[in-house]
Image (cartoon, rainbow, N blue to C red):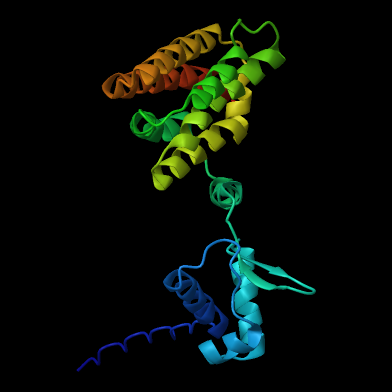
Length: 254
């Protein structure tokens, strides 16, 4: 009788580092005690007792939180560990690193933009001040006339994205705002996009200005359905034009 082959042993479960466990517990503690950016964490001796951990473990946990941008430590009189206000750019940078070596296409970006930006724009209707409208108008004056040089062409593309960044900064939904901001960051920083912006494309300039003028008027009227529809049409048209330029850029490398 053939004996059944022995089952392979399961790899031993990797135990979580004590400092990682303390770090997560400390994050929960900060949330439970509703600490805000700038608030000071307890002294080291109090943390030792609170989390029943060694001095080295507490310091390693704080260092981990600092590397995540959640805590900042200061030395000298009045020093210690403080809750940090995580800058959006820092979070964007960390997330961008994840996508750095991935082949992101224009369609990948606009597949999200076409759905998210209309909702983002609609969310600011009725929330804008005259100063906000002035900020939008200012971004548009940068590209009020057609570009005459390649450098202007490139700079106009970035200025057009600034129009959307103003709207994103006013969005009351932090998740929607962050996601739209991140997508705009990809359009501003990806090498593929920079190559696209270097190509002459008067239609991209004309349609961008056309839709943004319509958006500005609809926002002033506080016409939410119109804002949503205009932004969706804007995203669909921009995607088509950008994909056409993407094909030209990629063909150069084949």
